[in-house]
Length: 317
Image 1 (cartoon, rainbow, N blue to C red):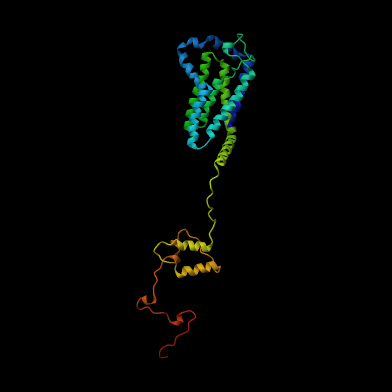
Image 2: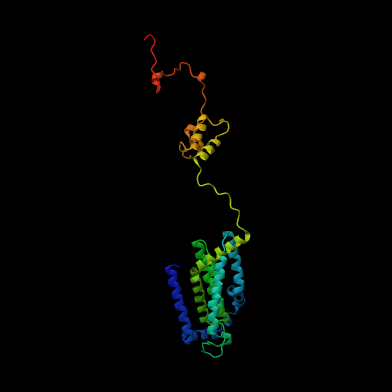
């Protein structure tokens, strides 16, 4: 996790604690909740009611999870990885644990079930604080931005996710299903889940590796091919080079046969391997010239010029 993300995480956690403290102590934030609730925005602008009834579905868990699961499933199939699916499942699990625990633990009643004007309605058996619609919109659509593959796509998806999350949270206040403080805490709760996702990357990687290992074992390991020898012996190198001669060059020459015999007997080291057989100058095909086919005028050198030979007697000497 980068230093900036870590700083954002702890700052968001401090804001989360501040909102909870403001509601518990029945501060100015609770009074603002009641003012908006008594204002009844859905009665002030009734022309938006039909549209916002459908728009708020973007924050419901089941429809958004199905839509994002279809997109990330296609991404996982194209990229041959299970990471998008694991990250979505992990983020939703973390969201349910954190937001669900906070809802049950604080038990706040919603605006339609409030019992006393000006009260914070805490620990009254409700499950409205923080807003699950808002937190779910932040996390579900935020995972799409988190898993974007390019910086431009990540920025675009982040802007769209923020607009959807802000719209869903404002819609719940308009419909009167949540207090304003519920929405504020829902935004922060969803942001905390997104900021914590890098800590779960190693767990996701290990889970993916284990699942792929189990899949390979169930399918059966593929038959291992014959292992290539690390190095060939000098004789095998010579034989393979001679056998790779182009067709039409004839059988191995006497020199090739003699050198192979020397290598196999260990009296001489094998030649160094070459990339191509035609780079061996002594293996290049040479025409065989018989004694009687020598050019005219060719004269053998005298015995005195030959090593170990005897000097010939001169004529008339």
